[in-house]
Length: 76
Image (cartoon, rainbow, N blue to C red):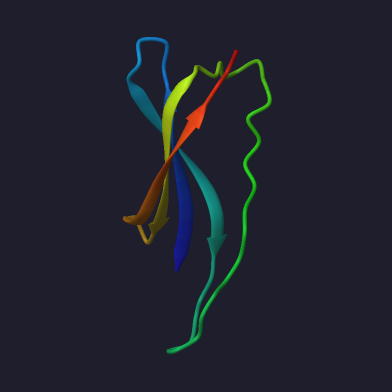
């Protein structure tokens, strides 16, 4: 099982662009569950500029989106 999360960053023009981040690659037995948490930093870095607006995060399991949530970022 490969679990990733995708952050759809807002660009300067208001459109979104996805960036995939790897979480975990695991083998699970039938009926076995996996729980966890993840924090994602939005501190300024030289390779990405953050823009204010409605961003989106998705949970992706084995390449298929299994859930998503939107959040608002104030980059001022």
